[in-house]
Amino acid sequence: MSRERMEEGQLSCSLIVKEKPQDGVGGCSGEEQGGIGTTSSATTTVVLSTFVAVCGSYVFGTAVGYSSPAQTGIIDDLGLSVAEYSLFGSILSIGAMIGAAMSGRIVDYIGRKRTMGFSEIFCIVGWLAILFSKAAWWLDLGRLLVGYGMGLLSYVIPVYIAEVTPKNIRGGFTSVHQLMICCGVSITYLIGAFATWRTLALIGTIPCLMQLLGLFFIPESPRWLAKTNKWKECEASLQRLRGDNADISDEASEIRDYTEQLQQLSEASIFYLFQRKYAWSLIVGVGLMVLQQFGGVNGIAFYASAIFISAGFSGSAGMIAMVVVQVPMTALGVLLMDKSGRRPLLLKSADSYRCLQLEHVWVACSSVCHFSCRTFNNGRKSLLFYHLLVYWCTPDRFH
Image (cartoon, rainbow, N blue to C red; front, side, top):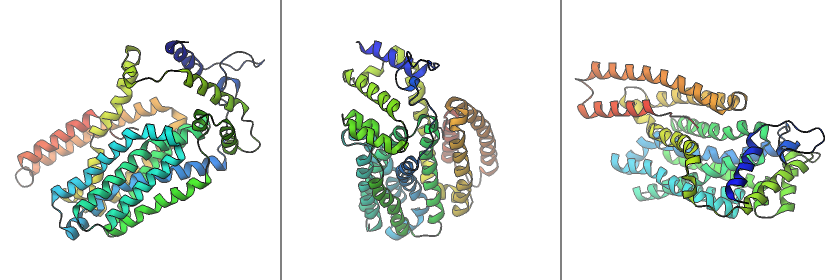
């Protein structure tokens, strides 16, 4: 069977909603026969597995939120220049890019649970390097290691949650990943307003240790076990996730059929994506991710305190204001994910985003015109307008 025919068959089974035949004959196997397509509730094991996984999401958030409240303390204690601290802040993204580039192979080779544990080791070592650092290069090394672990976690956590949760609650559970990132950023901002930068680094190791310990109490992903031909372990893991009295035969059959079809496909290169039939999906999917990053959200998160101080506000008050806005809106997205659907929620968010940016442009232009002689030089004006233009053209905060 050719790759194209198999893909068309898989799409017809997974994307076209069919009524379940009364005699149990016909339709696509697995999902249409009542296995995955039936409504399932979240068992204690599913909730525990998700909680342990999103401890890594919280680690992600603490890493992103660390540099903002720690900036003044690190610069004063270690005598860093602005350029040296900028390197410390941005090197996290470099480590994350390296980790993300390697994540796919690592996750498929050693499994989801081991990858999460492997990532946390890098994060713990990185936080300890920051904690005991006496020079700028120790800070940078620690930040790079935390970023590498963060890059691995950013991939494996949503994959693991999606593979262990029932289909009807999968969207909401997966979006908890983003909610916990926001909680990690926000709580780090709050603690950083009162704690020293070394204490904040020590606190950053706590969720890492929580996930490492929690991994001993949750099952491996059934789909990864099936992919590695560990069928007995796959069924045992699935039974544990769905409950002792649950009938997992249909879901296990669906996983087996999908895995066998996947194994029949030859290994494809990345260039296989660049075909005309994938062009629109590729542009939309990758475009949203790229434009989100160009929106500058990471730069704002890394230096929120300094940004608010330069604007004439208290750094602590500004960060608390971000917390008040960010966490409730992300929580609302989690609640609406499975009820409203992905595309309608994205479109509604885009409409609100454009209206908000109109207000931002008006305020910024007024500020520049009013304070041009006293506060802003030409370079700052250009930078401000450039940032506003980029922010206007990007769907920032979309996930």
